[in-house]
Image 1: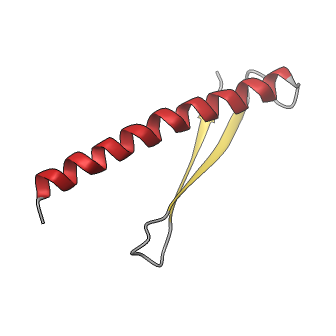
Image 2: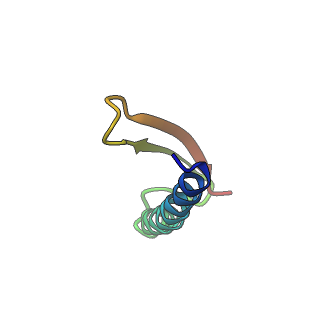
Length: 68
């Protein structure tokens, strides 16, 4: 296995995930504020699930995003 190639390809994937996730999170939060479902001082709980086809166990990453 070429470690440099693996590292580069993982980084490319994570860049795509990061950019896409940020846009989607911001879109949902902006809409929730506009709809009056949350206010601008809220804390939103977020969760990300990572699955890899060669693994039986998904990785769950939980966190919070403060709007203020």
